[in-house]
Picture 1 (tube, rainbow, N blue to C red):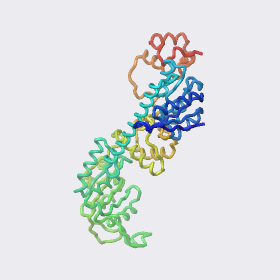
Picture 2: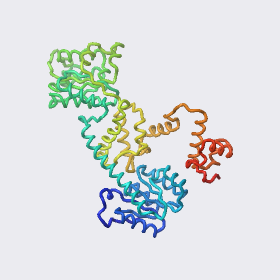
Picture 3: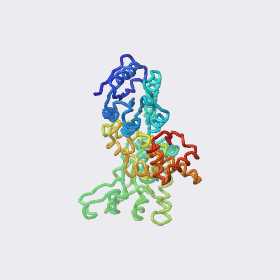
Picture 4: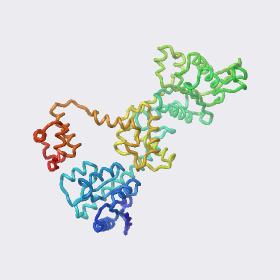
Length: 477
């Protein structure tokens, strides 16, 4: 049965942020330890059921577990692994009467925060609890600073702190006051439309309309009607007279997305709009004057398109007098943590979640992913992870399957490859197999395809015979 002990006195600053979950199968020891923790100024949750302790971690009731695991597997490593799989950010302090240096090092290697011998020393327990409490206080302050930083670094819905993005923001502010035509260049998903909207919001015509047209989504005849409008009877289905987007946004801004997808015939019509600021509705001889700001965007290299004869040179030079390039996410990986925080805030609100962040291994995957879909892909990853995440933090299992496989492949291939001698390769490989076998030399020798005596000889030669990772005292059978 789980019981919660409240603090009897006013706890020093920071102690209220940590409520240890105490796991011990001895009721007397459980009461004694809980009373000691309470006397140190902390509340506690006490239980003798490992599954109950896991639930406390899973549902966020406790981020610190003090566990006596002498009867749960080899020093309780099975339980330790289960806790860390449930929440990779949780702190676990292992307690046992069977203290050895090797067991302590193995527990730390597997993810424990500390290893305390029993009976637990009051001063050492206080130091361990205070360190975890101080760490959570620090994280809370850092999170508050990050939230303030996020507000300061948000530019009209665009987030970035990298030099490349700060330069984009600065240039957009400058051109917004004076532009008539702007070309925004960048890969798909980099946020070209967001930059266009920011430029419009900063321009003198921000109070006027912004009309958006995706040029790649319509065939030429429909695109012409969409942009220029048409008169009744000008084509089959034209049952009434309608203005186009240029007229609709007269006095404001028109954003032409993916202008590189337009045909040469459409480009000639757009050139006339840019040069003379005049349009003709489809089927009408009347010429109308318009006053618009024009922002075009493309994910193509328009210079190459001009050389290939697929884009008009005169239109290119008219558009590119002011050009803004949005860097791909792979060129500004320092923005990924900030973007993650931005999208977490967005989708926590959308899905009524309270996910504070990502586990370290999930963060590592995001930082190493090439992001071919750029910021749009990252947003989709965080959005789906917020839906599927069941723990406090988004972990590796909440990410798309292909990203999990990339992590496995990277671990196997070794991105940190460097030239080594065959002797060094052998030494590293033996150590990895031993770690996988938890120090069982007989099993390791079988996997390596060598005799146990040969393995001992290699370990002695490498000076690893008594290293904690090799477990000289571990059973060989």
